[in-house]
Length: 227
Ligand code: CTP
Ligand code: MG
Image 1: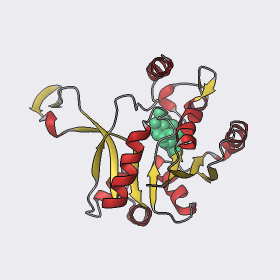
Image 2 (image 1 turned 120 degrees about the horizontal axis):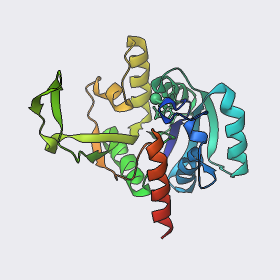
Image 3 (image 1 turned 30 degrees about the vertical axis):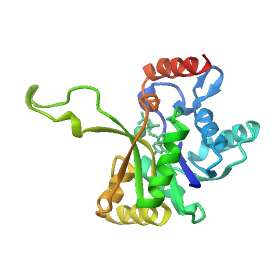
Image 4 (image 1 turned 45 degrees about the horizontal axis):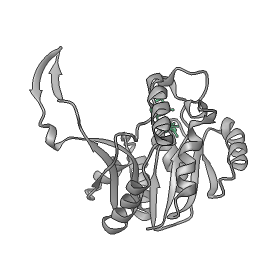
């Protein structure tokens, strides 16, 4: 199933504690966001790539896109204060299409097979998101004392990509904006319209580069792929 991908890249990466947007930090001499872009450039099912970027970083990012010959990049939207604003800005400018994938530019290690399954499932049922089973025991606590152990069998750690029929996610994003609703992922915007969201099992490698230790894991993943 063919799709258009929207990549929010307009954050600042505060938790990474670097002196610039974490996406511009390099792993083995190449900025993180270019690894993410590569995955979609190389995926035959990807028709177009759109990026949400900070106004002051657009020129720099465009230069990289040209230098690395990322021909599928079709355009840019100016990101907003929150990630959800950045995604909506992109959704408002992309040409109408069948399926849209929203994927964090900060997740460079996504598996192409997972992408294919997400696009297929979203086409069939409207919405599908990448997730992995929770590995640890999860408990709730109040004032530092356990109140409940949650049944782990029903728990998933949610990632991106999150895939949707274009018309569904555009409508959901517009309604959330009108209502002043802020979610922590795109699926929440669709869930509140009582639309089903399917889970596609992803890989534990699909980490989001968030804190400095993720740079160590990221390098280890890249090294393991060379072997
Ligand atoms: N993002 C965005 N617009 C924002 C905030 C985030 O496009 N206003 C993007 C980031 O660039 C990243 C993705 O959303 O690719 C996931 O967000 P996150 O990991 O939280 O990145 P940052 O917001 O940059 O990091 P932090 O929260 O640590 O500041
Ligand atoms: Mg953030």
